[in-house]
Image (cartoon, rainbow, N blue to C red; front, top):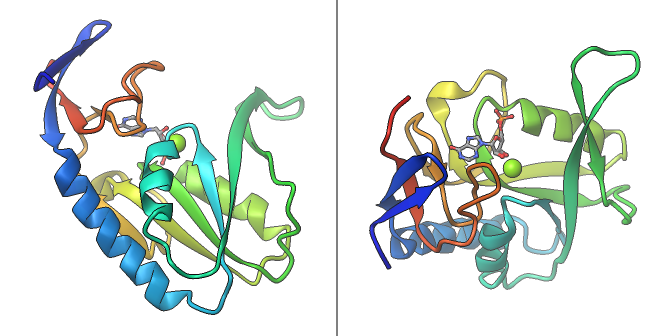
Length: 181
Ligand code: IMP
Ligand code: MG
């Protein structure tokens, strides 16, 4: 597999090889196995971006747990002018549950904040956050992110579930954009 890929108008180079990703996924899984033992956590994987991280993470979770998938649907709110993101796909009763949100990347943190607000109305006992990637310099909201596989600079990345305009989710490594605008 080439170290450089082209997606539409942009070229990307491998920045985090699969082996490095999986080493950090191992570590995060071990932390969760240790912290949430006996809590029967319900993992809520946020589609589409976190599908690959979720699969690799869950293969390493050895405590009793459940897993479900949610999606954030953007639509134009009637009363509001901005984009509203609605959480869809939750069929489980979250009352009293220990939740672990599984995300691909926390950038500004607005998406995660919105998700936490929405999940909070369903009366879970506690909500933990597990993210594959965090761009700490871009974070704009106060979030307690307990499980972070890797912190990265502000550059745009693709691969291992993450996309550029729908493309690039299928690559096993993470790539960083080469061509600056
Ligand atoms: P936030 O609301 O700013 O934290 O944005 C989070 C969402 O933006 C993620 O769930 C991704 O879908 C997307 N995103 C942020 N940075 C990147 C990136 O570098 N590559 C691909 N998607 C990204
Ligand atoms: Mg996402």
